[in-house]
Length: 154
Image (tube, rainbow, N blue to C red; front, side, top):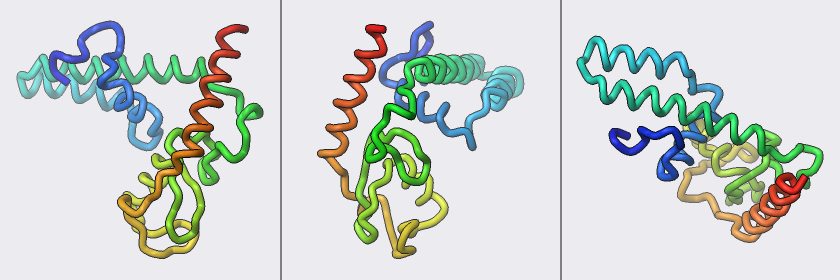
């Protein structure tokens, strides 16, 4: 990250990465990034890398705040756009080849980190077996764009 994220605004190249960090409640901790900065700066003599940790932390906080303020109310989201396991709006829907269930790629990716099976059929499943649901993704993107425009006009 060195040299690329040292501004008040989040570098677009890292926006998706920082947002993914912030959304993962199981792994993200601002305190851990601050501790990493202290270790890098004080114990390892790497102040620039330490600053990068603080920059990532600020970026994650900013993106999460921005994202929460622009969220579409759950009542407005059609059920077919919701991930069936997490009940969140899907951004990258994929079809599981054996069960033919549709999940968000982020949800099934987290599942596959600890269990290499389809959560519905328990048959073997790997990332390369996932089938992108291009049509559903387009409909979701259109829905989000329409809702965002409506929310900005209010």
